[in-house]
Each structure stands twice: as structure tokens, then as C-alpha cells.
Image (cartoon, rainbow, N blue to C red; front, side, top):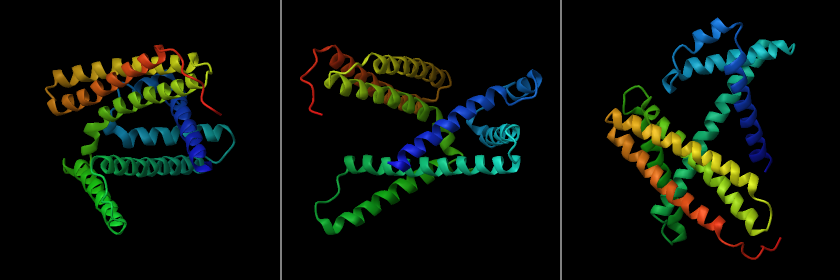
Length: 236
């Protein structure tokens, strides 16, 4: 619990500091415009990471701390969060693969099956990253990951709203947040699908549809569930 909540707090601090640095960590408007003359892409990650680390050091110096310490702290936090995301992704993919291909019932074969699934996931991820010859193959899937993240956030708020409703507790705020994120996810999905269609990126377009259609079906079921009369409150 401490690790989970602590990680969530660190991620929130990093997200908030990234917004502050992106908006204000420049000496003047000219420097800000030079940084954002063209919208940065995921391929500019080294430059964006350096901008974040330098901006973090700038704010640390304003608080009378050593800028070098702030720069090392920011780089360490980013590296740690990156490794945590990779570990979580491997864990989630292993569970998904276990659902698609359940492990054998014999207990003696279960560990070998788990290792086999892990190897499949690691090799598949490596092939995706290295297929372009530069280790940036996964960047092509970055917009799709963003869409999945938005829809998962909307689904998470929907689950919380349904759980609160089952306990006869107020759901207006949570449902409003979920609806807002769902609207953003729908708008982003349509815009991204149109971009892929215009660029004739058919593989990405089909993958986007495979994300959008189940998400729309899930949200429809959530709306139906919220519109039904409340069930008996759950025991607490």
C-alpha cells in the first residue's frame, strides 16, 4: 500500500511539475516561443526530458537548493517511473496472455508456463521496439497508448461511480469527471482516426478502431447501468 500510494503521489507531483515547467520555466516569452515553435513529438523525448530536468533544477535553485542535486533527483525519478511503467506493462500483458491462453492445470507445469509467457511478452516488445533498426519502433504506437490511457481513465471513473451508487452514495462528481474524460477520449479518438485515415496508416487505423469500438460498448453499458434504478446497498 505504501509503495502504491507513494508511487501515485510521485507521479502526480511529476505531472504537476511538468505542467508548471512547460508553461513557466523560461526567462521570457521569446524563449518560450523558441521552445514551442513546432509541437514536440515523442521522437523529441531526449530534448523534452532535458528541458524538464533543467527546468526542475531552475525551480530548485529558486528554493535555495543545489541545482545539480535537483537535476540528479529529477533524472532519477524519471528513470524510476520509466522502469515502473515497463514492469507494470509486462505484468499486465502477462495477465492478458494468461486470460487468452489459460495455464495448464498441473501445478508442476505452471511455473514453466509463466516463464514462457514472460519470454513471449519480452520478445514481442523487443521486436516492436527494434523493428525500425533504431530502437524507436514503439514510438509509432504512442498515440494508440494515449487513447487507451484516456479510455481506461474514463472506465475507472465509471467503475467508481457504479460502486458508489451500489452503496447509495453520491455519484454526481465522479460521474461528471468520467463523462468529461470520456468526451475527451472520444474527441481524441475521432481526431486520431481521421489523421491515420488521411495518412493511409491502415494498421494504426484498424488498431484505433479496435480500441474505440469496445470502449464505446463499455460506456454504453455503464450509462445503462447508471440509468437503472439503484440496487440494494452493499454491506459495508
